[in-house]
Image (tube, rainbow, N blue to C red):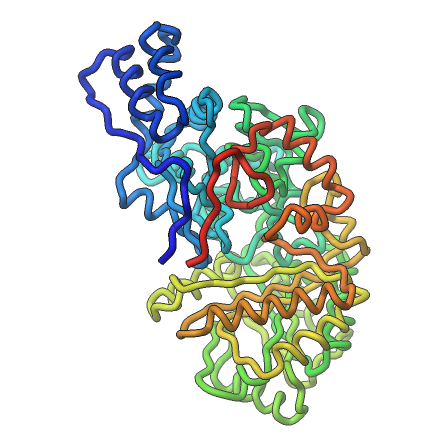
Length: 561
């Protein structure tokens, strides 16, 4: 296993508790020069000359006491969900308040050679985006642990009257769900997986099946609290410090650490009619999806409240063991026979959800029957489940437990997520699913569903194709056997090369680019503003170095396992 090179090879020291504050800080500044500084004599002179005010002495000492440098802590913070790259930090901060994060950043900026800082929630990035080689990782979940009282978190506050919830950036969406449901309310947009943090998804976009109607999660935020790369704690909104507000939402952690978000709520349903509709050709599949996302008036024409789609490659249906948390074994046989009978390289299915309350169950069933009559799925291949709202939203969480039990959760995940313009989605299907991936049998999911661009705020940082409708395509595959990772990475590279060669015009979601030119192309017209805001809010480029967009002086880069 090859580790990331670090320009700061030592660790933050453990200091004695019985020292006076000034002596404690002086020892810290002298000893930690091997970690965070390139010149020991500089801070030694400052410390012994009494150049630090008393308040700063005490605050710096307090921050040092919350940084763990033991091997277990740094190794745990050196990996992410992707299990593809590794980058060992020199320390892990366990903050008790956002003030600690600001103090850590200011401490870094006080050094002749500042160290990098990366916030980490659940570490659900795939290619080292939440890592800080040779720097300090901020364990955001510590904020939750510190404020938890008798099993409940104090960093959530619901306004039932104004329909919003204030949540700490470290909070998990699953906990936001349960807290807001106590008031009969819920956020309007959900990612498929809820056991990730609010700050993490808002730093990327936060997409899901409700985005066709409400936009991504970042389009449903009223306010933010952000700790910037200058160590400032700033509250922002569309009307206050708006440049930071729009930069931080989808900003990949480049402008600050999101410590609070005010999120829009709506009345929560009780139950869900959960539907999957099978198709053997991509034209009918995409036409029906685009029809469904045009029915976007909430509670209006009887459309779905959540719309996604999946692509099931032929061999995953017709060969080997099959299992599903939705389909019964007999239904999987039915889908396999459809693939064989039609000779299709893939079976596509729309996944829809129609929300309802206890007093509207019968009318919802009628609305569903009416809606299905408008669609062109294969006759006899509509599958419906009636489940609770919570069970529907946490469906991937249940799948996670099964995968963990089978030992195939903590494996490499070379995921590739793309936004593909509607005008090229059939070309993408032909070049990828019917060519590059035609004879593959991946372990994992392939998602494919459309969204309306006018539900996205273009002032935000996330890059999307320049068409009214674009598709989210997620190749969420896992490497579970020897050689799988290399093979999946070759296929990912072939897909990206195909898109480039054919001018598909796609954009990466949860992006990863190897060069500055790659990032410039990714952001397109947004790049100049992106770079200018980086200079304003993180001028020394110390935040989220794992993204690889900007390089801080002396910062290491994650290394491939």
